[in-house]
Length: 322
Image (cartoon, one colour):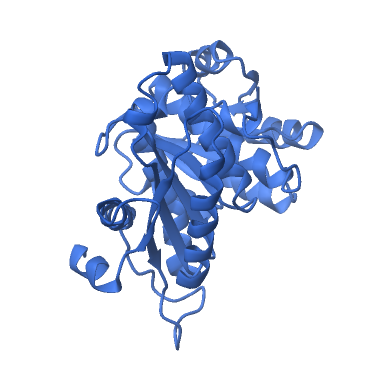
C-alpha cells in the first residue's frame, strides 16, 4: 500500500494511529521530533507525512522544512478539537490538508487513501491504465459508494476538507476550478441482474475510466452509489465542458454493464481578475458545498433531459447559493 511517516511526540497517540494504518496494510515509520522527521523524509520520501500540527512537535514548522528541502510528499497536519482555524493554518504552512480530533479510524484511513491515489495519478500521467486498475481504484472503492447523497460520513467529511483547501488556493491565487458530478444513467436498472461483487466491479471499472480520462492533477472519487465527483483545478468553464463531454463518451465503454450512458453536472468558479488579484490580496470565501450543490442540480437537469447529457450550472444559481 503506502509508506506513511508518522510524526507524533505522544507515544500513546502514535500507537493508536499506527494500528489504524498498519491494520489497513500501510507501512509506517514513527518519529517523535521535527529533526527526526526531516532526516527520515530525506532518507526515504514517504507516500504521506502525517504530523501533529502544534504542540511539542511543531508540524507546521516541519511542513515548511519539508517544502524547503524540495520534498513534494503530501503532508497532513493533525490538530486538537478546539482548533478553529485548522484549514487556514495548514494552508499557510504548505500542507495538503488538516485533520481535527478526535481522530477516528475511518477519517484517517480515508485521508491517507485519497492522497495516495492523487499522488499515484500525478506520478504516472502517461500510464493509461486499463478499465480496472488497482492502484487508483482500490483505496476509495470499498467504502465511498455506500455513502448516501448529503451524508456527513467520515469519508465525505474528509473529502470536503481536502477540497476546501484547493478551493481556498484558487481564490487566493485567482485560478478557475471546476467540479463535475457524474452518474451512470439508470444504474439500478442496468445492474439489477448483477451479483454484489459484479456490481462493485462495475463501479470500480467506472472509477478507473474516470481516472484515466482526466489529468494527473485532477481528483476523481466515488460519492454515492453510482455517482462520482471529479475535481478539476486550473480549469475554466470551457475546459470543464470539454472534460465532461469526454468523460460522458468514455463511460459508454463500461464493459461490465449492459450498454448504457452517463450524465454529468458541472459547476465552475472563475475568480475575477483585476487589481489586487495577486497572492497577497484578501481571500474571498467560496463554498465547496455550494459548488457541490450546483453540480448536483445540474446533474438532475441533465437526467431530466433524458440522460447522456452534460449540463453546466449557471453563474446565477451559484450566486443565489451564496
